[in-house]
Image (cartoon, rainbow, N blue to C red):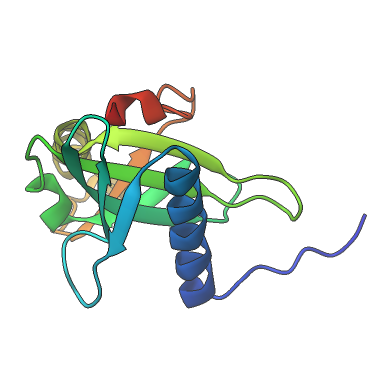
Length: 150
């Protein structure tokens, strides 16, 4: 078995975004990158239907269908916002893509956090506030759901 080197956080993030841009291009979308600390990574449009989408890309190389988000992601829930969660694989395997409406992400994060904060931790201690949230899709409900952008 060969040693698998993980990318740094920054390189994994860049790779995920590049893979998403490539997938979108192959599917007939025009994309523009949003630089800086914006709440979206891409704007994507398809000329055939005049729809424009804002896309937030989150990448992991953990091997699990789980991505770290933040409290602000509970508030991002407008109609044309979508998250593209990328699970990087060992080269040359193609990454897995999970396309999820922003409203679904916000709802899932809110429910999960409410459950976590109200459940006692170790030794029955109350959890303190955390800005960390997690989105999971272990069953692959949103795997390859590019059709949601149509």
